[in-house]
Length: 285
Image (cartoon, rainbow, N blue to C red; front, side, top):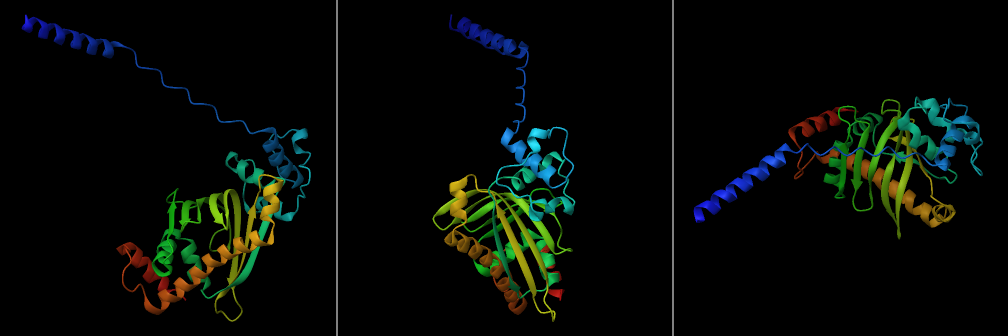
């Protein structure tokens, strides 16, 4: 009797397995269509293109190009179209919509760095190596990882616990010493935890006399509403933001000086490939 029960159980299990195999495969879920930009977003994008004299796609109808109230379409808002950035490329929608948003806050910083153009060019062309050197010498954790090897235009990065995000170099290159990055990030600015899109432009050139270089940094943010716009324009907020930028630039200069003076020294988990690159860096003027 027990043997018959076992046989029946085997037959039932076998039949269930066959039935499961005989069932047609479940249909794959249909991917959701990409979200359609809001009328506000399309107006910000289309108005910027039209007001800056750029080619606008056919979807930019006349009502969408009348301009955003309170926006002055000046040279800085229109500049990227002169830098080889195609505004009709679907990937550029977020960038040009950002430039066309009503609220904009711009932070500017100028100064001098005790590092040569050639060495800064080298580090900006290899951000993960730069991050490793900064972490080693400055004892502040820097991390950078390229997301599009071997092109190396998109990357994600972090500095300590107060800054992280992803960005794309949308214009320029280290050879031209005029670079523009656009991306999304999170930063701790005093008591405020800020998240959003931002554009960063970095320009630099050798100082007269050939010692060190002069730099100009422009950071553009687009506050989400009038209240945030007011906060980001306060003197306190501005000083904190510019202070963070100075800290990063000072870290670059100080790490370069320490590398020149002592080499890598003790410690540091540098790979043989990284050490070879650092030797190349030290041979630059």
